[in-house]
Image (tube, rainbow, N blue to C red; front, top):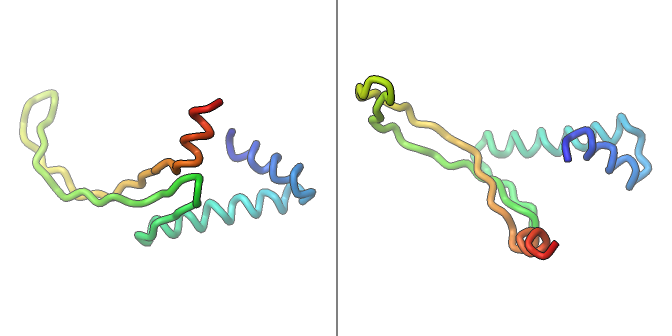
Length: 92
């Protein structure tokens, strides 16, 4: 399912207009993105959680030349599946 399909499903389920359904979906994703960007955790009980992992700087190697390079610190978003979602996916 992509974003357009989610908007269409919301529209059909709730009777909202397409533009209102799009507004709701975009607001949801914008708020999730903003929360993650500020370092907060986003948790949807039974479904999943999103959080940000921080990595320290380290010395790596260029695979082509073998030369050591300094890798900058970074933050990456992660997804963790909830128990109920695991069960639902596993039993279908």
